[in-house]
Image (cartoon, rainbow, N blue to C red; front, top):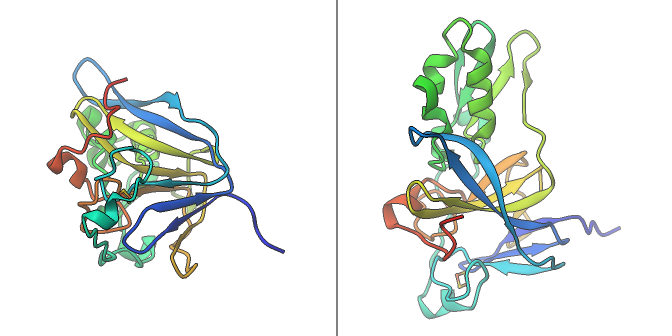
Length: 230
Ligand code: FES
């Protein structure tokens, strides 16, 4: 029986083909008075559609949707070196008194939640810092950072709705990746799945060196999908 649940297909040198109608909304990185990333703000909800194609070359004139510009610009989207490496194989592990933190740097989407309050890598080791460290790691959109319950070896993943988010980063004045939430499968053009994860950030600017995943390059290239500000 065909599975008609939500799915994201990474087409070859083309857009993300979304099927199964997952809701799509803007997800804005909210900052405090010091400019530190502290919360996710639910932004504009885009029209519901069963099937749609989202630009990943960064050149569409109709973002976030594909308008065929990838063909005009000859978009080449080679897979990055870490694209097929299982998370736990590339992650470094750091134990603290309350939680363990795993960190796979190639998946960094530059949302900077880990920088607040003295950085997650310090907080995790600090007595009493575990809860804040856990929270920061759970905010990480690409799932670079994962907190674990020390004694149970259980990942403390946040509960996320089955949905897609268009990340906007007004503090940096840029737009960010496509946030795939709740374990929506991501497959290549042959239907081969990437590792299934609760949080994944897929490149939308076309500049990542770790396609299809975001590596934070949108900040360097000043990617703007036309909706950076809330
Ligand atoms: S992927 Fe089609 S216009 Fe960008």
